[in-house]
Every structure is written in C-alpha cells, then in structure tokens.
Image (cartoon, rainbow, N blue to C red; front, side, top):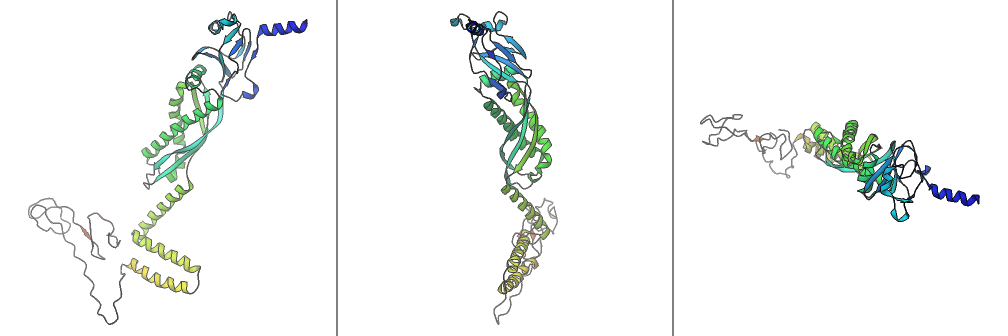
Length: 362
C-alpha cells in the first residue's frame, strides 16, 4: 500500500527538471522533453537562466532558484497548458542558458589574401586565438539564435559564434593593414591594435543575439612559411640592388657567388671555369664587356658617347641648351630632356635612374 501511495504522490508532483552536471560547461542546454507534467520541480542554478519557449516566442523565464510548476502560482504557464490532457501537462521547450563567462573558446582560419604595402605582393594571412563570451540576454539568445537560426546544440551555437569572430577579423585585419600601411613581415608588432579593433567590431555582430564577447587571448596573425620566405627574399633583393647600383650588377654578383660556391665543392677544372667566367662577369661591373677582334684584324674604334643635348621647343623647333625649362626664342615651356648613358650612349626618358640598355646608374 505504501509503494502505490508513493508512486501516486510522485506522479502528482511531476518530475525534477534541472541541468545535468555533465552539461554544466555548455552555453545552452535543452531539456529533452517538451511535455512537462504539472507540479514538476524546476531547479535553476546560480549561474544560469531557464527559458520556456513555444511557437517561436519566449513564454517566460526563471532566474536562479527552485520552483514548482503550477499555473495557478506562475501565471505565464497558463498559456503553455495542453488542454487535451485536462491541464496536467505543459507543452513547451525548456532551455537552460548559462550566464557566466565561458572562456578559452578557440577560433582560427584563413583571413584573406592581402596586398603587402611594402612589396606590393599578395600574401595569405591566417589568424588564431581564443575568446570568451557571456550571455547578457537569455531571451534574445533563444529567440534570435536558437529559434531563428535553428541552432539547438551547444556545438552549433559556439561554432556560429566562432564564425562571427572570423567574419570581423576578415574585415578588420585587412582594413587596419591597408589604412596603416603596415608591412606584413612586421605584423606581429600590431597584434594589440588588431585585437582591440576586432573585439569592438565583433560586438556589433553578436549584440542582437544577447551575447557579448568579453575578451580575446593568444591572438596571433601569421603567414604561411612559403609566403614569409617570398617576402624575405624580395626584401633582400631590393636592399642588395640598391647597394650594387643596379639590378644587372646585383645579378652578376649573385652569379659569381653561385659559381664560387659550386667550384668550392668541385676539383681542378671547376677552378678554371670559375676563373674564366669570373673574368667575363667582372666586365659587367666595369661596363667594358667587349668581343676581342679576330687575329690580324684592325680593332674597330669605340663609338664616342653621344653628347647631351637640350630639349626641342614644341612651338618653334629651337634646340635649347641642356637643363633649360623654357625656350630662349619664343618662351614656350620645354619638356624635360632625355638622358643619355655615359657608358653606352643609349637614350632614356627624363627622370630615369638606370640605363635601360646596360643598367648603368644615370
């Protein structure tokens, strides 16, 4: 008799509804049953809110505490009563939404191909780190994210949040690099600025969903090994070209260095080849690479370098003296005179820094 009395009392009291211990680390936990018996006992922990949701709308919420689900005591439960059961069941979805700060949620992925302001080369950037989020409006989260986006599991919700972070990163990282003209190889020095800009931008994306991104950490922007090596080589080549005076001279120097390294690993004949090729390449630096005349032939006289002349007046055709900006005959403005190479005599446009024919500095 006692057993049946206890069973009847249990059925009258309903069930015990609470978040299981195994799901304490989840932002959202959905109670598996959508039919709740009248007089069921609801327990809401100190760091969560219980949301009763039906037909795309929030019927009501419960702050931390213990409650007996009775429509006579809790008015909003009246709209959840299943009339077909004589008022003994509530038809509703119950969500437990954590209100504490959830930390160490990882994010990472490819940002975009970015044009390096220093080298004008396109490189791919990647970003990694973690973030923490806090639910500030449990009802907005359930209606706008769980209801509208049809996300029901904790994994789906955190994945969606991660995509929001990456979406902000893709726009903010590129904008900051372009506006600040930051060299990609030195991007690590701007990590703090990128982190703060991203944190501010992502708030705008997640605020309508009742969520705040509290902070970000371990924020890292990186290049692929291949792109990093490309930028380093490009920077090195530009620096060495400036030191050598022209790209032609720099290329000749690189060739000599490569031949020397190869000969150092070989024997006898390699040294002879190095000597012959080295002499030929050295002529590039001296600007005197010539073809020796055939035996018995009279060497041809060297062509004299063309004397520089001034620009021709577009109005009257008068040839001006070198360096003149206006015609001495009619006063018309003159176009800058072309430059002539002192080594080979080739003509180059005004403003050129190196001869297009031989690479000599003008």
